[in-house]
Image (cartoon, rainbow, N blue to C red; front, top):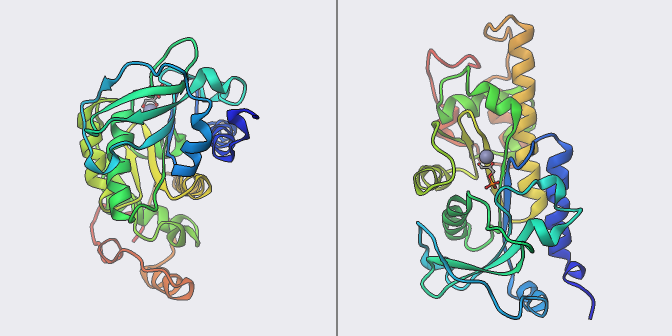
Length: 286
Ligand code: 13P
Ligand code: ZN
C-alpha cells in the first residue's frame, strides 16, 4: 500500500522547505508554505487520512472558489528545518468546508498543532491567484529574506521603486518578474488585516514584499514559486552590495529603461509599463 510519502507532491513540498532552509530564510519557525492539491493527489493521499478528522475551525476569511479544496500546509510554530526530518509532526493536509470559511486537519501535525498562523493570508491569496491565473496557481510561499527586509528599512515603501531597483540589479530579473513586485507596509502578522492588504497587491503582482518582515510569492508549481523568491532576494542582495560599495549613494551607472525595454523585446515578455514609466526623485535607479 506504500505510504503518503510515495506521493510526489508531498516529497516536493518537503524538498521546498529544505531548499528555503538551505538559503538561510527560515530561522526558527520563520516562514511558511501552502499548496492547493490536485484531485488525483487528494485521492491518493486520502487512504492515509485520519480515521476521524479533527474539528472544523472557523477562519476570519472566506472564499467561494476554495470550497472543498485540500491544502498541504506547514504548521504554526514548526521549524521548516524539521519538515524533512519528521514531516508527519510538522506539516498537515487540511480540508476546506462547503461554505469556504472553515478548515479541518485530515492528516499530519501528529501530537497537536494547527496550520501556519498566516493561513488566512495564504488562503485569501490562493483565492485571488486561482482566479487571476484561471486555476493555474497552486503554491503560496512566505520567507524571511534578509536582504529584502534590510532594504525596506532604507528605500521608500513603494512598489514602483522596489521593482525598478530589483529589475536593475541584474539583467535577467525583469524576465523572471516582468509584472513587478508589490509592497505591503509594516503590519501585525497573522490576521485578516495583513491578508486583505496582501490580497490587494496580489491582484496585480505575483509577489509582495512585507516591510520589515519578508517576502510573499505565488506560483503554479514549487520550482516557479521558489525561483521567484530566490531571484527577488538575490536581486535585493546585489542592490544592497552596490549601494553599500558606493557609500549609500545613487549607483554610478545602471541598466537604463531602454535597456529594460530591449530585454523584454528579446525575451518576449511584457514589462509592467506603469513601473517602466515611473518617474520620481526618490528613485535611485533611474
Ligand atoms: P508560523 O510559525 O505560524 O508559520 O509563523 C511564522 C511566520 O513567519 C509568521 O509570519
Ligand atoms: Zn513571517
